Length: 207
Image 1 (tube, rainbow, N blue to C red):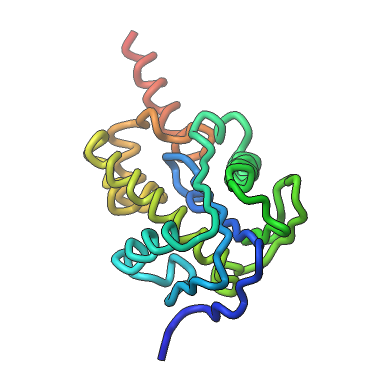
Image 2 (image 1 turned 30 degrees about the vertical axis):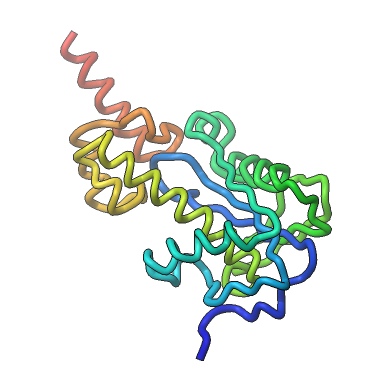
């Protein structure tokens, strides 16, 4: 039996939009918008979190090959700290939709709210497990961000970033308290801010 979403649900020029990285303490929030081709089915599409890493990697290449259009976008750490994570996510979603080289008739957004777009849009709660185009977007966004986190593991050793992908696990929180924040940590997030203030306080007490 073929596992995955029903490709018969794919409609002409409907973009699926999703994000990865709202919860982590470090790194960008990454978004993707995808318009699938109804004539070129992609078997096994599903919510990226329900797929193995190997399956996501394989689908990542297939989606980019078969989609009518796709765009991977982001909001950087300084934008998250300046705007807040919700507004930065909306900005990154806008960038993903605006980056499509084909204008969609409709953008379906995973979640319960939509960014301001120049095309009609609608939110779909748990859309990454219901709408093939959103599932495809979730895969593009997650693979992209996971690869970045693996690269940061080499640049900032000791935090375990390649494993937890920046999420606030006990390992990450302990390293943050011991080593302090890196340039990719979001200082507007409470655990990072606390670690930063603790180190600043320690530095001040030594002067």
